[in-house]
Length: 436
Ligand code: CMC
Image 1 (tube, rainbow, N blue to C red):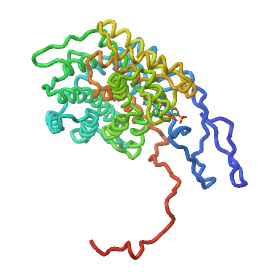
Image 2 (cartoon, rainbow, N blue to C red; image 1 turned 90 degrees about the vertical axis):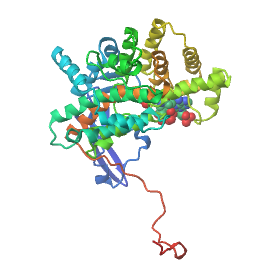
Image 3 (cartoon, helix red, strand yellow; image 1 turned 135 degrees about the vertical axis):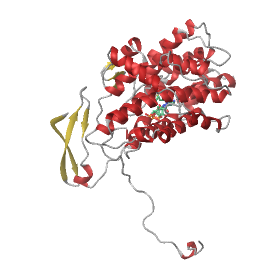
Image 4 (cartoon, rainbow, N blue to C red; image 1 turned 120 degrees about the horizontal axis):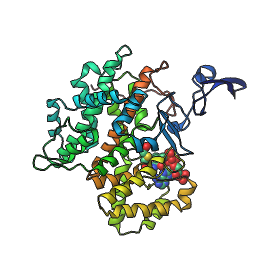
């Protein structure tokens, strides 16, 4: 919202006023959209640490207080009282579904759960050790070849068409994720079932087979719902920014989400959940104590990271990590699993939280620190962890892509730079070639 306040910049002897805006939670922004026009200079902001790229009504995050809300609802409330599909509806449509809408949404997710049979063949062409995130991104982008008519980012595209593409993506990405797992273990694909709800359907596609049915335990269903809810959106993080940036060229929803999946794969972002388990396995295999590992991280001066720790925005305990930690204890107890990785993770947390290096830098466990322990307990292999993150983040990507499309300030995103290369120079005699 605009305010009466302005921010004054003095530059090369002249002063310029820039409007000041506030959000509904009183966050303050200086609108520098006209900075270059007025002053001839651009703003340089490495990593966009201070840059707001859009106005958004989807997610509110306060990194100092550890607050995270979707459309105004605290994640703690949603994790306790909702299922993932309702939260997805909330993010995409801006409100909780009523009973009718819930039933319709569920029926639509069922209707769109199958993949075109021809897409099945793609899976067989990947090498045995292909990472499921590579398969997932390629398959999601491939959806645009099977459903080209309903995926455009044209401003005149009817909302109904966009909604169908969004529903299709929500439902099919779950099927693609489960198929990519089945492919990786060489088992036949299990098709979605209309009698099962979203998470149960996913677990069944992952773990049942023609020779063995899978018993869906309520504790596992609850843990999965909670994990997906907690990953569902996180405002302008790296992958969501990728979705918005790619979408700003008016790229279709499937391709934009494909870009988000690739960004999420990185170990500093969603790929950190796999890295946490790699790290714990490395510590166990090295024979070093957890304290020695922490000391190695500290002395490496940024060369070695404690994965699952630290966050660009949270400077306190990540509220999602708190809920996941509690859920982790519950699910392991219910399934009577004693995982030495959990003991090691807890020891690591306890050492880091008392250490000046981590305290002074506000480095706390993030969403990725304990999630892998739950996935392991459910039977999901570590290569699939980031796929699970992507499944959870999908409604957020869709909501943000839709919001950007409907934004009256919609603009191609195109940052500037400060050029630091050589000044103009010509090809020298010795460098010339006439070969073609
Ligand atoms: N282990 C050890 N040192 C760290 C860590 C870590 N995990 N994270 C940050 N630091 C240090 C960093 O070296 C720097 O030290 P110094 O001031 O001496 O140079 C200081 O803390 C500030 O770090 P930064 O790199 O400026 O912080 P950032 O905001 O750019 O980085 C981060 C955020 C998430 C990339 C980083 O904390 C990190 O690499 N963490 C490990 C990877 C990880 O768990 N990522 C998942 C994030 S949560 C899921 C998601 O939403 O993506």
